[in-house]
Image 1: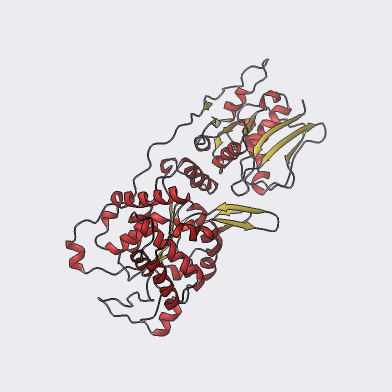
Image 2: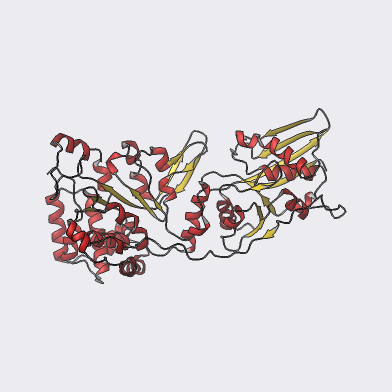
Length: 510
């Protein structure tokens, strides 16, 4: 048979659209033509496939006109993931393997010149799409990629270390085995990895009781947080330990986060079900932060999906990068639009930001004098726009500790104890409204707030006196709802509103 079809998948965002690799062998001048909107990496597959077949002891049809079409023609294809399907298509079209037995399988893998299979990006995304579309097919993937794809429940995944491992499974009944067949073929068992490494413990941070209380509120209600304080006050240590306060990841959340990490080539099996903490450097561009490129790749906000995005030295980030965070903070997703195609990535993260109050860092400090002029302070704080600060639920000052307190203080409260209280409060919210308090929108805020008369009067007075926008008022109301949940109260009392109000600190010159 001179025509064969092999099935695979491309990557467009978190989607993995189906790709059919059509291979036709014809008489004529020898050539190897590859069509179907293939990127440079895909076109280079011609040389990789040729060498892999020859070095594996298989026959490459040198005297034929080879045409490979990657359908659909208008779908961009990138990376070396189509090497294995192209090689199998040539073997099926030349009769070296049984083309009919390829049905019901999908293949992806990059070939080395010796025929070894190398892992590819997005294997978990491929397996997830098959599950979402309820497609029953077998995935054949290289080592590393197969272990990722097998994490999806009920997925049929086979691992192959070498091209010959695959060829051996699809030989025509009358053919003998190829020379020196590989032994790396195995069906992957759907096993869940062992427990992830433990998070760093908040007990390492001495003092800072008020800040730890705010972290507890943020974890209980999924609220974003801005910490302002002098250098060395512990902002980074606190932020890096925040993920340990969040609830354990469900299987669906773990799969979503792992799929995004797989797209970027950052997935580690050892960190399965561990909430990610992204910490990009303040020199990161807007594209690095929210994603982009051609084809679009996930940015830091998507890689922190279902986890924490920690932005240290917040005012030092480019203004365009910070402003790009405004929509994802509200919607929980990011859409990368290009002239040819759009890609949507999830971006439901908790923002933890830290900054100094002024360029020298000691504005309002009791230990050192600030040497910044009012104009310098104003310019520094002005790097953060009002709309961005408005979207951050909690603002807290992190004071520096005197040396005697730092050295003599006992270990602080452990992550385990604080996380237990946060989880209990979040469970109350889930039972009441089906989601975290920070996710309340529209009429749901009024329905679930349950303010007492004294709390309503206090909130109205605070909003009027502090000049809050409607968004700020609603965010303080949601924080008060979380504080009430931590206290085990069905209604929001005045004391809960009073505590929430003090966490809406607005940067001011002092």
